[in-house]
Image 1 (cartoon, protein in one colour):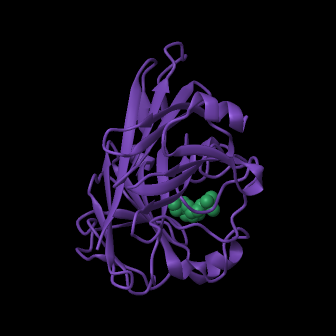
Image 2 (cartoon, rainbow, N blue to C red; image 1 turned 120 degrees about the horizontal axis):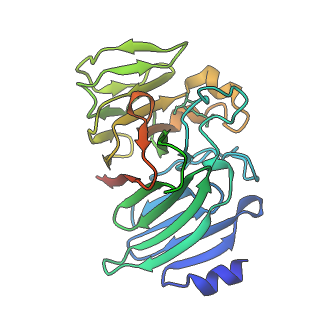
Length: 291
Ligand code: TA6
């Protein structure tokens, strides 16, 4: 399979390898940046601009196994987010991250970046995911509802991005000061905007709705800011599991909560997308960092 992929999608700066757990990954290495994308879940597991620290965070305890989610990087939550609305047995965050995606395309761009395109089909939806590794990390999730689908269908989606931080106690997130949110810690509580940058002092799990704001993660310890821009995304989810939840997750190190947080570009809850047969929706997130 790897040889076939190498033959079919051979562009400068891209190669295919057998990764953790024997899962196939695309390795991108260019003068601008390096990155990794597993076919399993079309899961970006690494992004690092040249001369900078890694931007994405990965758990040292992540599983790399068929039908299991990878912990860290950018899991794709689709076609639902969180628990399934009517099927309590269904996997959290949908099935997209639990299955192998097909490689559809590979392009070496004029600006020195490399784009790899992956695809899968779930029920009447076909999803493609284009990942561009360059001076910025650009991710575009395109969802199409088949023209012969029996009726309009709705879906939720999130690019559940895990970002690497120096120390969770000293970082802050700007951009959501004026947005109301659902507080998901210990239930679901509607909260109004508090006009403040987000700081972390305990477990935090918030779903901000009706916002297309850019988020800026300020990290004094790493002396950098990470910028998360997005388009066609009306929800942003912010998450850090803190101590107790970290200890309950088998694929997450007990102390790892101090070195990561999630800024997720999404369409969930009241921002779920409804498509008519034949229609398409594209959500994009662009991640960059600056000193
Ligand atoms: O995006 C935040 C969240 O929904 C949290 O509630 C937390 O459960 C996290 O996702 C991780 O979910 P997972 O299914 O990957 O353990």
